[in-house]
Image (cartoon, rainbow, N blue to C red; front, top):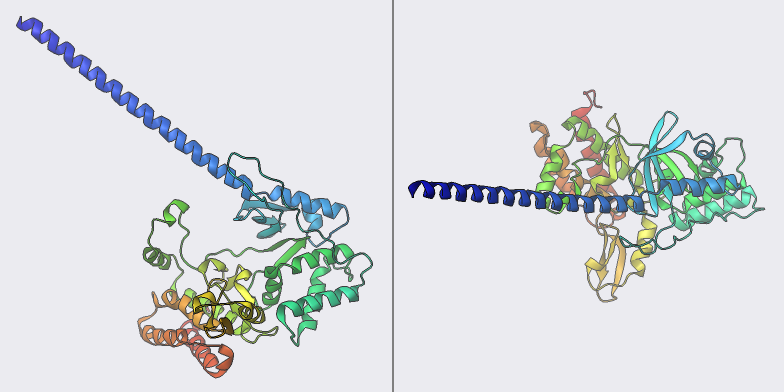
Length: 428
């Protein structure tokens, strides 16, 4: 009886062990299936997003079709469409109708941008609706003389920048760029390409600022596709977290992490000098005054020599344009009077209209952006004075045009302080 009982217990244990093994197998099979399902969905979403955002081949086909039909021409057309020596590499696009790629053109590495018709409505699993047509290159029209085109460009600049004394020299500079094959003449196809480029504010502002070394140089263009120098280091500071982590990391922790991923302090000082010089050059500059309406680190980068570059000129707007926009805005409070990210004016509550003067000048916003960047790792003998000057700079209020002396004094003192510290180093 005892023997039979032991046999039964052994059989029961074997059945129990087999049942457990089967349960574990089923559980792992289910988890494997779930992982494959979720992974496939993520890959599908990523692929769908990529195919919607990254359409460089469409951009090239559209541009080259117009080039071969004689509608447009430019310094990059032959290399892009005939010789295949200008080509797109990694997709950086964030909007379907604004294609951005890294690219190569002979010995030059750069960033290629191109406008493309956009999808009106698109859901995953559905067919995209027809795209809006890309801009038509219909201006200037056939028979337009070079002098008439010069007048068109001048009037366009006046509408963007206001009446400025030096616009004639800017027009000459633009016509020189328009002569893509450098034969001394601007052909109708070249003029059409140039006119299309000038409709994009970021291209116009890039041309205004590139002579002073603040923006990447324009390397070439074809229609409204253009290529600029690649800035090797960006953003100005910090790190780009993977998108699943962005919403989980608190902003305070993100700011702390950002300050760890920066160059040595003397190099940060040189980069900061570049930002201060940019502010100085656009404050009552050659072609008027401009406002920086987004000082995010993502809009700036720097070169191997630690020279600052403004990589997204959409952050800069002519002060005249800001004032026009503010005059047209109705408001209930100051919070209603905002242009871009952080260009603000005050609200005249009695008239329910925004006042046109900016509340904070560029210099104050630049110092706010540089405060943590410069104070972290600053030499001990410099730290206290640097902090004092930065806070004095951040306290600037009102329209900087009404306080030229104070603005210039703070700017010059800050630049001199940084220069004294780095002038004897190799980073200078």
